[in-house]
Image (cartoon, rainbow, N blue to C red):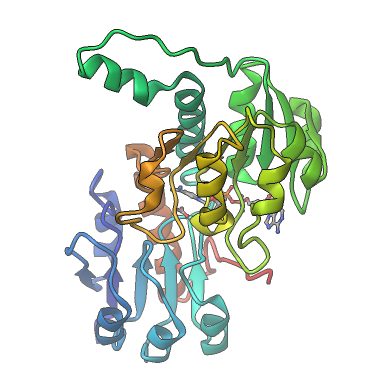
Length: 320
Ligand SMILES: NC(=O)C1=CN([C@@H]2O[C@H](COP(=O)(O)OP(=O)(O)OC[C@H]3O[C@@H](n4cnc5c(N)ncnc54)[C@H](O)[C@@H]3O)[C@@H](O)[C@H]2O)C=CC1
Ligand SMILES: O=CC(=O)O
């Protein structure tokens, strides 16, 4: 019987045909989510019953979904953050998880840096000024020479650090597993969480979302920050307590923030929209031609390796 593969991410295979050509060699029956949005749990439960492998974007692969997946051998994350997958349930059921580590690193680092520059120079507001037939200037601040606090020095955090050296920034970092080789090479200083939040002019978050990192930035951290400091989140919405961020921005406890990710996505009619010291983007960190192509190819390689009983590629190891 032909194996069935479900593909849900919107941008999969949109920038090149290579991933589909790779899949063709195996004569799988391919199902594609053409709805333009992630599946609801109830939809996935129906579809997944006789699926052997799934390439998934941000759809929630809950324990209910997994319990209904009678043939599933592999869940392949088209991306890096696997917080939308019930990893423990998958482990219990013997379903392998593969992902695409590093595939979107440079794209997320680019977006992070561009958000930092947009915040410091009020780029969105400047654009609005000119479009409304006004000619006013806003005094911003330089990123050059400032202190950057990088939370999470994995692939993306390290790439942000590389960009920051070009701006002669003083770079502080915090990570549960510090990488001293990288730090020595780039002149990055590992500090404790409190020091980073107290001293940084720009803080950027690059942690995976899990029980340990949920609301990693909460009241206490906003209280430590300078009132001239900015925070940028391109990791996952749940890393920041959004209600507390709202108050910090509203009361000018901090200077500003930029969010590519939200506790609820999309953040429809959110009260965050009232704030003019906040820049928003719709979870676009990996939305480049280059990252999409790399993610699609690595996703297909991972999926095929498990479905065809080869040495699994890009296996996600649950470190708990
Ligand atoms: N906005 C977007 O489109 C994208 C968002 N992401 C998010 O960015 C996150 C980071 O991505 P990468 O850098 O590629 O992952 P990575 O796995 O290379 O780096 C994560 C880093 O966080 C550290 N870490 C983990 N738990 C920690 C804790 N409790 N305390 C301190 N440090 C901890 C790890 O030691 C590691 O250095 C992903 O998990 C994903 O959620 C990733 C790609 C695109
Ligand atoms: O959000 C995207 C990812 O790769 O994780």
